[in-house]
Image (cartoon, rainbow, N blue to C red; front, side, top):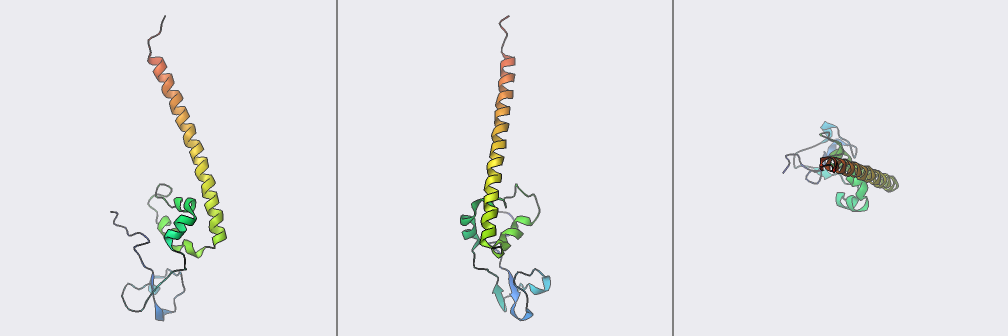
Length: 127
């Protein structure tokens, strides 16, 4: 298993007495200890977002973005975005995925055509 923890394995904890803003990432507002911890949750579970917006979730796959921490950052904070914006993004990702499938099929057609040409060229001529 990857040594990095997934967003599901992590809890964002803040010191209840630090008057930290919800969603802040300032180091002094994050607490690793067990005392006075509050889980930051905007009411939307990651799994629910995965089901409601499957194409948007697909945008967070590692093959879209290499070793950058963006997918984990976005996924852990996606619940902060309004549902109408999430729906719009999901629709855009659905269209993007369809366009990529079209390109992929075009590549397969070219590979088939090229392979057929090579195979035909390898056949002995009847001259």
